[in-house]
Length: 446
Image (cartoon, rainbow, N blue to C red; front, top):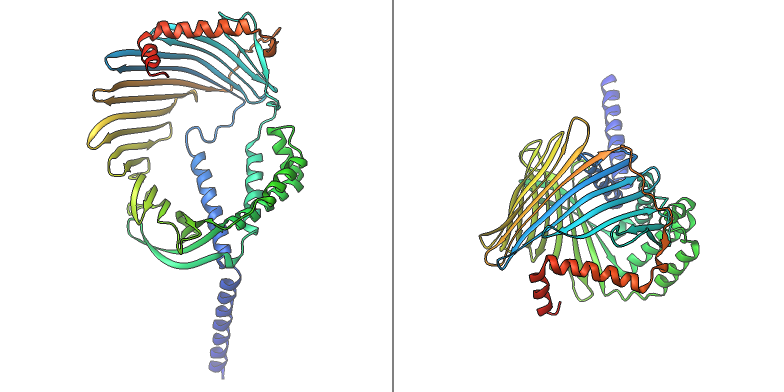
């Protein structure tokens, strides 16, 4: 008797478990739910990757950048040199930006410039050509900026409205194995957005923003003149625009274990096409056979790569970069990400001939100051030999030197004669510094 009871109870438990699994897949494992969860995971992963960089998650009140950039070029045996030095400063707490730059051409002065962005005005002065600052009213208040929290709020609102506009019947679902350094089982979800569907989604999002007080406040930080009537005008225009259904976009995601998107696929489709257009853009993100992350961007035609850009992880800190464009232009290099330094090195070639190389790095010292270095060398045989080098020093939360714009004038008060003197002086300096280049440009009617 006890044995029968145990058997019966076991059968009931198994049946309930089966029903539970069935209910889960029916109610929760729908195409739309898989899509929403996977897309949200993909966005969050992208945000976290950005935060993990040296400069990706710094909270600061002030930022000062001291720049020293040089360009040396030889064109048709003629040598040219441009040097830009100076400072940029950003006072985040007061939303002010200022700069003081000096530009030299072939070791001769071209321009000295001082500028300040404050409230709704941009002030500027060329010290040796202007006695005072002049300002131009930009028409919007720059004292208010969008915060990270504001961006997150708008992003979540827009995504929610987008997701809510979709239904399970909008998706085509299947299973497919992708060759991503080995076969990866995935759930393939395709969403076709035709002109009418895109129009409906756009209208839904705008109507939500219009009715949401917080969203309007955020937009008014960008432009104080934005009002509900502006949204109404945009909605009226969109609603009056006829959607003829001629074009659509098929967005496909391939979802692997853990609701991770390992491939995004974008394919345009015209009205005459029975299937998606032969052109596609693929974005892959997955762990390779060595257990490190690989990211790849590819433009594809009829299943063949037209252009690819791939960053393949080879260790916790190192990745290999490869570029290929139509089998003609190629690039090879490395990406290194350590606790106090990030660097990129890339060599570019065309048809087997090296065109140049790029090296960039960011280094953090013991005082939490940063140095950003950039070096670009280009050598096109018989045409161009150029070197660009830049070294920028970044320091956070240091006291900034205030810019005194007392007595500044509206740009409207500057006379035509004064403008002409400034224009002529700068033109003459350029002609003196680069006589051959100016002559060549003149001969070509540039």
